[in-house]
Image 1: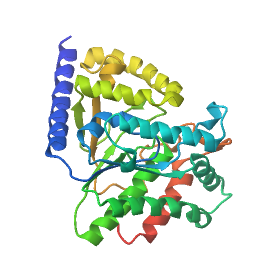
Image 2: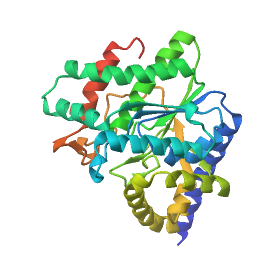
Image 3: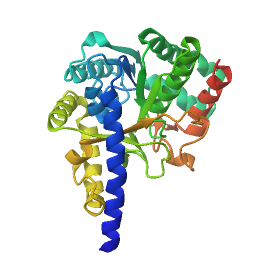
Length: 321
């Protein structure tokens, strides 16, 4: 019992510091904040941060989010249109007008096709670069056109390849922007999930970077739930997350952490992107622990043979490191 009490106190102390720092950071205010996201619904895990950034926030989605079209009776294009409208409806709940959003509409289906063909060797990175150049250029255009003083994107986490690619191309664009404009952009990443979705909305326990947190107010939680309601197409996915939260909640009774899905969602975690982050290095010891079960028509999508070749290609050709 004494050991459990000490563990609880230590955990609560670290979390309290993270909440204090995260709350103060967002209170200082950014004048031109930008959310750079891979998919429509990526904003949900950080809906509280989204709200606190204010009405000047710009939202960019890189894909049309058509990846799960096969769970419906729609074509990828039809499914993508549904997802894109859901995203606009979601951010509208916090007062972000459609005019403050943009979607570049890249097909997840095609992204996965290229990544799988890199893995199998059917395509070379030279061939694939013609496709990925467009994604890189769109993200760069958004950074240079919006001119943000703070950028929030998905964590470089090894949970989902498009999350990682959007993070990587955003990092390249920010480095180039900072060099050309002689300024510094605050750059933050937000954990989505890894190890399928078992580690959800948090950095994994061994993450060494700075952790920042906020605790949502009741009004912020109500708004977050309204945002979730704008995604009827993702009901199955949200249900899967709830199941994970129930399992994690049992640990919360010992550590003093969240004990159910609502308590888990009421705390959000993010952190500054380490400036020395090595994008050529896998975030997990084993390649199989990265992008678990991700494939395209039975061909795996992996870090070592799908994403790392893309990273190395663009790092070698970037004007900044």
